[in-house]
Image (cartoon, rainbow, N blue to C red; front, side, top):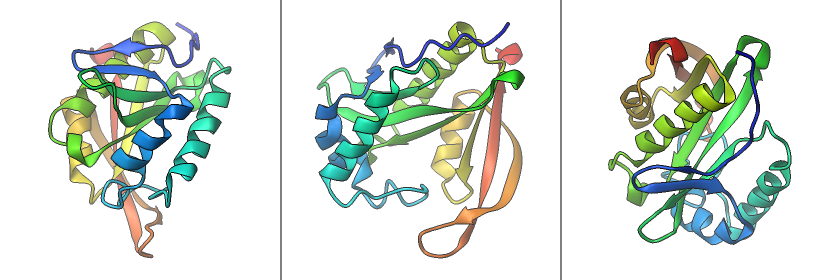
Length: 185
């Protein structure tokens, strides 16, 4: 099957609406995850110094939604309609029918299975609607909780990439890599 890009379409799970970002999400983004140094501790970006930086990031995502190969979802909690995190896809090489997912979730919502719920739904969409055969994800080796999300979503550890980059504190970091293949579903 070849890749049939469909873009960021709405996806509904038990507790979440995965939807396109809107500019009005800037306040939630800044307050719930992007402005929190603890949430951003192991990420290459952030924390955002103010809501305006979050707004500009969202405007960039929104402008890219016209492209069918743009995949960036806001995770909206159904019970209160707050944006509590994000999940996105980086296209690696469509010839190999593989992509990489990345995600971020507000600290208040950690350890509730919400990110596993979102990741599982996005992987299902990428496998069965878009046509990817394998999906990768990776995390800083110190961010153990992120690896647990990957495992709970059915991903398997494959390897550790060493000295991938430099943390904001100046130390080098390694990344654990996980993969899930469509054929293993």
